[in-house]
Length: 212
Ligand code: FES
Ligand code: FES
Figure 1 (cartoon, rainbow, N blue to C red):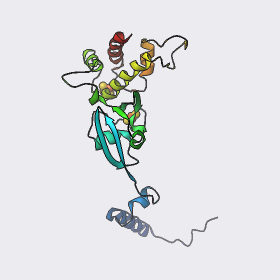
Figure 2: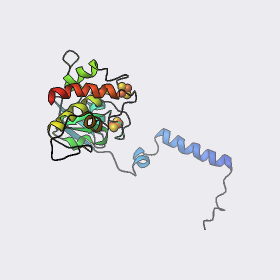
Figure 3: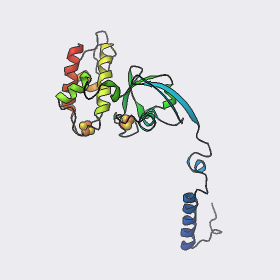
Figure 4: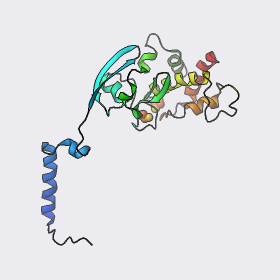
């Protein structure tokens, strides 16, 4: 059993010790690495990728997510940070033709990749068909989830066209279908706190019609 009797502190002394530690931290007299990662130093790396058709070359901490690389280093803030934990889909981008949660992947893992964000799909004067359909069907309210929804929806239609099954594909021997059930399932990783789901499905369904 531990013997704590040798530690004799008054309450005032304990408070003083706490204040002194906080002061040392604030003054920077304790190295940050010692506090945050057991002494390991950050490592920087140079990462090159094609983002929306533009070559990007950034030097960043190897722990930087693709989401933060896009937003903080390339200043492409269309891609949104919702949960930063892979749970909401607000950060969805298309990497080498597949949609991913950019908050769950490190930028250094995508050396040489082709990345498409919402900024690369269309422009205000020349909307991508999916963007135009979201506008037409009121597929958003606050709009925070919308860039992720649209990137996801564009990739979903490619997934169905490429006959990639989902959890609700009943018969794997027949080609994947553009059904509402399929669209809802495939879009289930994109959360909309405003609850614009029915309009989102209508928007995607209209574009899917031209893909079917
Ligand atoms: S911010 Fe990436 S899934 Fe929520
Ligand atoms: S439109 Fe507001 S969260 Fe989806």
